[in-house]
Each structure stands twice: as C-alpha cells, then as structure tokens.
Image 1 (cartoon, rainbow, N blue to C red):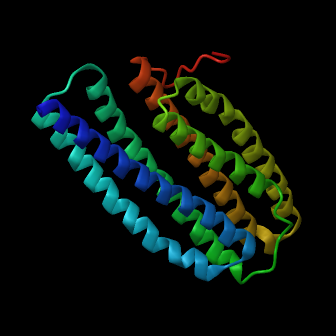
Image 2 (cartoon, rainbow, N blue to C red):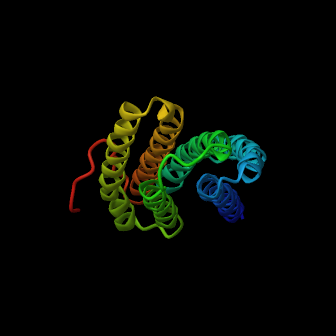
Length: 222
C-alpha cells in the first residue's frame, strides 16, 4: 500500500512538471512570435504566464523535497526526484529567458525593422526543438534522444555567432541602428541559453535513466 501511494505521488509530481514544461514551451514560442509580428500586447501578456511558472517551480520543489523526506527513496526513485528538482529549476530559468525576449519584443514593436528576421526565427526553431526533444526524452525515459539533444547545441551556438557578426556590421555602419541591433543580439543570447538549459535537462534524463553524470563531458557520437 505504501509503495502504491508513493508511486502515485511520483506520477502526480511528474504531471505537475510536465504542466510547467508546457507553459514554458508556450512562453518561448509566443515571445518569439511577438517579436516577429511586432505584437507588444502578446509580449506583455507573457509576464502573467511567467508568474504561473514561478508558482509551479516552488510547488514542485517543495513536493519533491517532501517526498524525499517522507519516503527516503533509493536508486531510481531518488535519481528521479533529484533530477526533477534540477529540471524544475532549468525550466524556470528558460521561462525567464522567454520574458527577456518578450521585453525586447516590446521595445522593438514600435520601431522600424532593422533587417528582415531570418536567422533569429531559425535559431528559435532549433532552440524550441531542443527544448521539446529534451522534455520528450524525459517523458519517455529515452537517454538516446537526450544525447541527440546534447549534440545539437553546436548549431545554435553557430547561429548566435553568425547573428552577432551581422548585427555588429550594422552597428558599425549606422549609429541609429545600435539600440535595435543590441536588442536582437540579446534575443539571440537568450535563445542560446534556452538551448543550453535544454541540454541540461537532457543530461539530467541520462542521469535519471542510467545513473551516469555526463554534464560538461558529453561523448560525441554516443
């Protein structure tokens, strides 16, 4: 009976974590959409969604710590709870980066376009894809998919560098472009952090599934 009750609590914790993940993914997608469409109202609405994520983060952390204290789990269950606490924190930080993008979208909404947005939407697509795949690997207990996410991070880094070089050229040629260019550079940096934190989630999935710590030492091709 005790084990069944514990298993049900673990499932409830996982469901709450997945609810938080869905809100975070929505926030990132809509912050980029607000940027592309110059929709300040949409961007402004995302601050309330971030507050929902913050509340869930506190609830999930408290629930996980309480489960560890009450049941003193071992092996896989303990790894899951420790991993869930870390993933919970990563998701909250991703949400914060979404808010940063929304703030840039608000500032840029009333200004003329500096350039057609081509690379930032591509970078957003890669970063959001990494986030989705990292969460899928967690849901499906799939460490191979998690490793694939870790290997994808270089694509996002390359796009960030490309965006920076291009916008630096704009800033050097036209002083009145500096503010807009800096906001776009900030957007690219926030998207890079989304990708980095998605990699963290994938590393936690590998830890949960295989009891292997791969942080800072992902083996390419494996």
